[in-house]
Image (cartoon, rainbow, N blue to C red):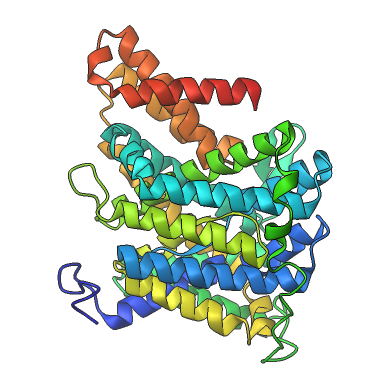
Amino acid sequence: MKNFFQFSERNTNYRTETLAGITTFLSIAYILVVNPMVLSQAGMDKGAVFTATALSAIIGSLLIGLLANFPIGIAPSMGLNSFFTFSVVIGMGVEWEIALTGVFVAGILFMILSLLKIREKIINMIPQDLKYAIAAGIGFFVAFIGLKNAGIIVKSDATFVAIGDLASPATLLALFGFALAVVLMVRGISGGIFYAMVISTVLGIIIGQIDKPEAIIGTVPDLSPTFGVVFSHFGEIFTPDVLAVIFTFLFVAFFDTAGALIAIASQAGLMKNNKIPNGGRALLADATAAAAGSVLGTSTTACVVESSAGIAVGGRTGFTSIIIAACFGVSLLFSPLLAIVTPAVTAPALIIVGALMASEISKINWNSLPVVISSFVTIIMMPLTFSVATGIALGFILYPLAMAASGKAKEVHPLMYALGLVFILYFVFV
C-alpha cells in the first residue's frame, strides 16, 4: 500500500493522509446538504439527489486516488448546480430530465477529450506564470468563500461587500476556530486545522450555537427517482438552447477542474517541469465521475478546491482521496451527524488554506508587464466574479494579446491564441 501510493517519495504516512482526507471531507461535507437543496428547486427528488451526491463523490474520489495518486476530492460543483437549477431549468424552462441529459453528454465529451489527452495538453501548455496566477487566484477565491461563510464579509448595497457583525455567535465561533487553527499551525502541530474544526464543533454544541444531532444513524434515501433518466431523453437535447447549455457545462467544468488541479498540484509540490504528473489520469477520473454522477442523478462533478484544506494538513497522495471516498460512504448511513458541520466550523480552514495558496503569487514574474496584467486580472476576477473559470478565461484572453503587443508573439503557444479567441466568442455569444 505504501509503495503503491509512494509514501516515501512524498514524505507522508497513514496518519497524515487519514487526517488530510477527513479534513477535506469535513470542508466539503456541506455539499451533501446544499446540493439536494439546490437541485430540488429544479423539481428533482431531494432524497435521491442526496444519495447521488454521495455516490458520485465516492466514485470520483476513488478514481482520482487510484488512477492518478492525487490527494483530491471530487464532488458535484456548487457553481454548476446553481447554473443547472436557476439558469437552465428555471430561467430557460428546460425540464430537469433534459438538463441532466445535457450534463451526461458533456461528461462523455469530457471523457473523449481526456482519453485523447487534449485536456492534458491544454493544461501543460499554459505558461508557468499563469499557473501561479491561477493557484493564487483560487487561494483568494477560497478565502473569500471562507470569509463569507463565517459572516465576516457580508453583502452591501452601498459598497457591494462590507464587514459583518463580528459579535454574532456564529461569527465568533468561526473567529475562535480561525485563531485556534493559526496557533496550532504556527506551533508546528500536524493536523492543526482538523483539530481546530473538531474543537470548534464541540464548543459550538456546548454553547448552543450548533444543535445536537437528532440521531446518529439514518436510512439511505431511494435513488430511483433520478437514476438512469438520462437514457430516455437523448432525442430532446438537439435544440440550440440545450446545445448551448451542454457547451457551458463543458466549458466551465473544464476550466474549473483545470484550475483546481493546477492549484492543488502546485500547493502539494507535485508539479514537475511545468507539468502535472498523471494529469491525464486525473482528468479522466474527473470526466468519468461527471458522467456517472449524471446517471445517478446529480449535476456536474468537479475537483473541489476545498481539497487544499487536506493538503494543508499534509495530504500528498491518493490515499487521502480514498479516505475522502470512505467518509462519503459512511455519510450515507450517518447523515444526521452532517448537520453539526456548519459553515462557521469549516470557514477558518478555507481562510487559512486561501492564504497558503495565495503565496504562489510571489513566484510570478512581476518584471514583465504582459505577465503582470494577465496574472492580476486572472487573480482578481476569480473572487469578484465568484468563478474560477471566468478568471482563467479573462487571463487567457489578455496574455496572448499583451505578449503579441510587446513583440513576443512567438513565445506564446499557438493553442493560447486559439483559446483566447474561443473565450472571446464564449463571452460574446454564450
